[in-house]
Every structure is written in C-alpha cells, then in structure tokens.
Image 1: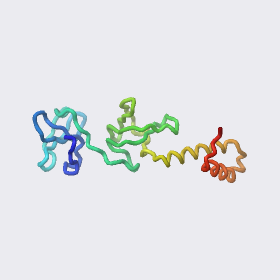
Image 2 (image 1 turned 90 degrees about the vertical axis):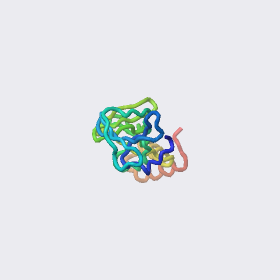
Image 3 (image 1 turned 135 degrees about the horizontal axis):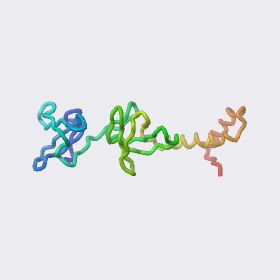
Image 4 (image 1 turned 90 degrees about the horizontal axis):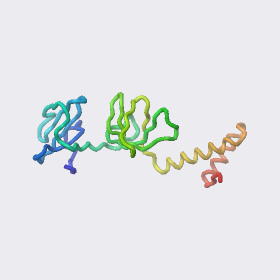
Length: 170
C-alpha cells in the first residue's frame, strides 16, 4: 500500500486504504462530515458512496505537492503559521491536516489544533537565507533605535554595512 502511484488515481481522491482480506487499495474522498465516496482502481469515476467512516484503517493521506505560498495551503502541506493574536515573529512549523473555507486543523509537535480560517496566516517554510536576512533586518532596526531620526538614511546604510560584515552588539 505504501507505493501507490497517485498520478493514476481519480484526481480528487484524498485517502487510500485496503479492506481487510483484499490486496487492492480503495480510494476515498470526504463528501461531508459523515459520508465518503469511494473508488476501486480500474473503474471510471467514483464507484459509490458510504455513510460513516471508511472501514479501512489506517487510511493513507494522499501526499500533497509542496505549497508555494499562493492561495491557502492544501491538506498535507508543511508550512509556517501565525495566529492574529501572536507576536509578529512567532511562526511555528505546522502540517495542515484539514482545510475548509471556515476552519483549519494543523499539527505541530504538541498535537492538533483547530483554527478559524480568518484568524490565521500561512507562509512557506523559510530558507536559511531568508532567516539570515530577517535576523539582519532585526539587528539593523535595533541599531536604528539609538540614532537621531533625521540621520536615519545615512545611518541605516552604515548599520546595514556593519551588520553584513558581522558586527553584533555585545
């Protein structure tokens, strides 16, 4: 079951599983909170509908293509998330487990959390270069606090140069 070629499966299948005693996988998509459509390979389209959870346990989540930051992340995407009430620099790494227009469920090292979609922001995982650039900007802003605002354009250039050369306040 682990080596499923998802490119040959119905496009909107979300999960795979196998019914006990059978070797063939069965594919599912969530229709509502209490019903799923299922698909057997080799058949065109969806084969039928069931009420309740699928009998196949565990279900294997369809791998998500990496998210590029456009739109909202899809289920399975690993990204950074920030809630509106958090400090601006707090962007923990999460995995999206469920997504709808109203809600998101994410998982981090502490477990799953439920969020209202309007109160969270997502961004792709930052590269080491992006993290270093943010640290430089923070250092420059810290230095700017100690100068006369009228001299900030010249001083900002000097502080930027000092920061890029590795100067850090002891």
